[in-house]
Image (cartoon, rainbow, N blue to C red):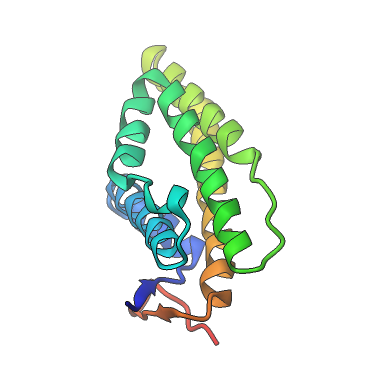
Length: 163
């Protein structure tokens, strides 16, 4: 079965997240987690194949209020990214910065919403979250480009052409 893996520019993901007032970031997170799950199923990686993208997104949504679920979701996503890199014969490194970036983003966002919208805290939250998006997307783009049986889909403005 042919799987479709999308190569996306991180700037497009960030831009769409801003334009849609954060709605797209959840759609994107669901999609990349689904793509990792599908790669696991195609390559007989039971751990990846069992992942549940919907629960990953729910953890981010709940994590906006409680913080811990979003950190756990990003830590697990970091592990899934490393598994995908191993499948694609790439240098599988962990992405330990992801949970830290999400903790900073969630904490700063929560404090700014509770204690008044401090511009500095909101800026810290946004920069940390956008950095996390960039790290995830760059690592997965390398996997999708390297994975030989991946079909690269192209959508104007969202995706870059892969060789």
